[in-house]
Image (cartoon, rainbow, N blue to C red; front, side, top):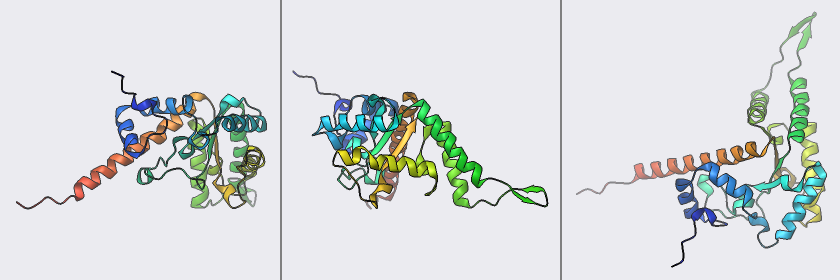
Length: 235
């Protein structure tokens, strides 16, 4: 009698299998499996193209190809948002790329601080420094930038459009392998290209695990709310 394969070994679980997976394994275990033992769904039929994708991105950012990962729906084959878990990956979906590099992380964070320094620079009135009035959106962006950086993750989407370090990061993505591999995006879709930089592999695992933990929590809330809305039949 053959042993039934572990749910964790399934390459691309469907929505119901994801629910069981999240209840049976820790987010960290699933994150390790996704990052280390999965060919991204988007490249499932062309693993060589995945290798070329990693090599091209790695060359552009001066890192090793083994430090390039794809995460999110392009990896799992479906949305990893609770209300959209049944939505399968399509050609219109994003390709979320994660680069692991301590030096790149440090340089991007430092360059981001240049933007922070600019928007928080004090005004001078009669020789007295006066704190600038920041918009709520700017405050949120600074908060997101610092929160993720403290977790060892640099996210360009924490910065506003027009910030130099954000624009250069996205432009580099659009100018390298996305063209070479036949994945070139339109100018309108470039904003959908998502990338992030992790300071270490441990930080990358923690980042993915946090997303999975949030997914599990949201699914439980959906189930709880559904149970509460059920009508008890009158005897």
